[in-house]
Length: 130
Image (cartoon, rainbow, N blue to C red):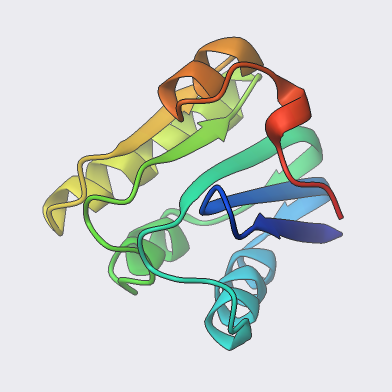
């Protein structure tokens, strides 16, 4: 699956977009790419946009494991835009696993506007692109 991310250094904001098939390998590759990016830091806010996902092949084991990789600080505010029931359910499952490691600033959303507000943004134009 294509995944891309863009960083706005001034806003400490990461925008991640997944499209097409969503797999365990995509999650691992995304985390590794962020770890390798010198502009990324643990307190960065993030919007993960799953609106372009067409097929979900993510396992609960990978969701659990990735919550324990501790890439983000527990207080880093992150939102996932998950418009379908399946994607929203996976985001909620991930949120539960994050709670096990003390991360409480993660929110799954079905619509963009509430996710942006939760991140302190007023509109989609404030998201970094790239």
